[in-house]
Amino acid sequence: MRLRGILRLTGLGLAWLGLWLLAAAPVQAAGVGLHTRSVELVIGEEGGLPLSWLACAGACADPAVPRQQLVGPGAGSLHWVASDPALAEAMATRRYLARVQETPDSIIAELLAEGDEVLPALVQRYELSRSTHVLRMQLSLPPGVELAMESGVALIPEQLPGFGAAFSDVYTVRVGPAGQDGIGGGVVAEGLAADAEHWTGIRSRFWAWLVQPATTTQVSVQVSAPN
Image (cartoon, rainbow, N blue to C red):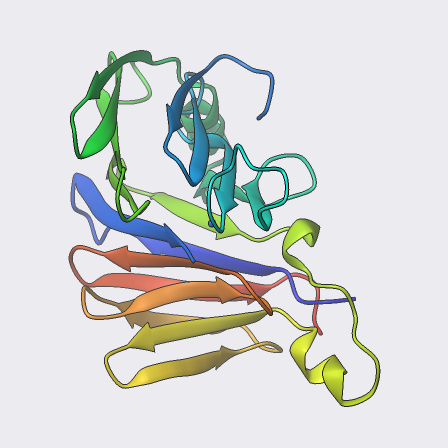
């Protein structure tokens, strides 16, 4: 069984967690579609997070192009977590009204939810670049709520024989100006700091799913199925 990494990001008490997500890459549910040539993304109007995320090494319209389902059934997920189960459930079931704006450079979706006795008013904003295919997210995180980024079995590559087995695993990594560093595949890492100079996330043989916070953010890595 290969590693399934879980990356948790905490907004350090800030009202907004600003970050960029890169896929070095649809669910049939109520959602808002953001599609570029190489990315097909659906944001849920319930929960305010991606329901489906397909990344393509070229045009997704070309069936011959390599592709990776990052979010969706059998794939990974982005979801809210909290030590208080009621708070986590309230975030997951919060209903949003969405509005979409298109510019020559990007597609922007803004999801708004009114406050109630459990949660304040929330705004989740997504901006998908048409040229780089990087997704910029500005997320409202109430105190006690974290964002979890979990890879799924779809990211696990085909097992290669012999020495090729070394390229058949999934790893948590950090990528910066000096290159790539492995965070590890067998232990839980706590208290890591993700910053604007590094991409941090999960990679397999051909694909990487990485996050780059706009401000320094605490990250923990949890291995749910080791290599």
